[in-house]
Image (cartoon, rainbow, N blue to C red):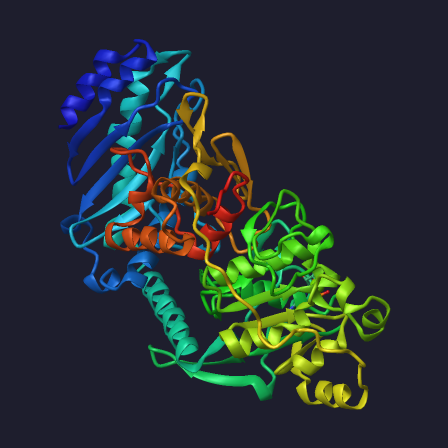
Length: 568
Ligand code: ADP
Ligand code: MG
């Protein structure tokens, strides 16, 4: 009852802030229901959480907008963005203490991700909102709260939700976009391709800290070389030309500053769907492709890195390799093995972020430093085994070593930001200029050993409370330890990091010393499939409006970077 809300606000006006707690509950408004799930304890604390639920009878979204999961996610994202903009501009003119007058919803970036901020189903639409209940000092500003909740909020609902307020062609375009993206993902699977990059794609970003498309200066749009070009037929009658990267081993070569890393970065991000206008909306990559890099200083817990590293000084074990402080090469070997354990189908590697001695050991060095004195088997001698024995492809950016010509299936040269296929030339050079290397990879790739985490490694307690949370995009605080995720270049959204924190906590509770890491992860994602992303949040009775789904691969990677992790 709206009147009941008004009465409470009237009654508590001017009282101590704690009186706001009386608001907790549900209120029927004309055309929607307001849920006040959680009320903050003081004006500076984490803001209050409310939900607005509007029946379909009111918003009247056509079924075909949300029946299929990919369209539902796209619609939820669409509404999320509208609310994000509206609440941004909706400067509730509240002057007060602390977070007074704040009203926000989660803020999506360039990707379209499954999120908890908006829920659409056949019965209703629900928006999850964070709100700062207004105060003057520590006194309740009841009138201001009434303006926010009883006047401005209904206005927001009216302006931003019913079908007639949405631009129908824009929503229809969005639906066609995600239909196309989904169709291209299917085609990749059917054809066994790793990635597709459409002509006219705009790959470079505005800056190192901005994920928006580069607009200033001369920007070269992508155009597939004839030999790698394919034309795809899309669901809504259009066709799309672009470059297909088949499975196997692909090199991206070219001079410095010619756009190699930019292409690889676009492929890394192609595991997610992007919004229209991003420039990468038709750059689609197999969703189990993983960027791996060197990450010295990371901890490693009992990983079998013996396919790459053997005979360490003092006979250190590399079948169950552990360290508090990995080197460039051991960290890169670990990152690859852990990714394979977690189900990677394709590795994306850039020389810019690789350990040189992990990538290559040339003929001269082989003669000076005998194989018996070199613990590292370089990636060049493993990359084909990885593909032939395990079906794992690689895309490698390499401007510095032509030794890889021998092992590559195709070579793409970036030339002033445009790709050319130079496989024939590279193979001819490999043939006429023998490199004198001895192949060191042995007869098989070697074992990937599944690991079983122990529950005791996951201690979320900090003092007497439990504390697990994201602190920025690349850090999770897990009890007393900080998990550094800065090596995960495919983690893109703070809300994903928050979800990872919740998932790690849950995973820790289920680690019983019997289940493999991959089984624990599969179980969690099955639960999400069944019951939605909300279920991972530990805050019962409170909406988790700020989570976005990460991939299983990032969850595995996050667990692997927990410094207290213990493996059987
Ligand atoms: P490389 O890895 O070959 O050294 P990068 O991919 O780092 O080169 O690109 C070098 C610079 O060129 C970057 O600043 C990038 O933003 C810019 N750049 C990349 N691709 C394009 C493009 N298609 N059009 C315009 N500038 C680009
Ligand atoms: Mg580069």
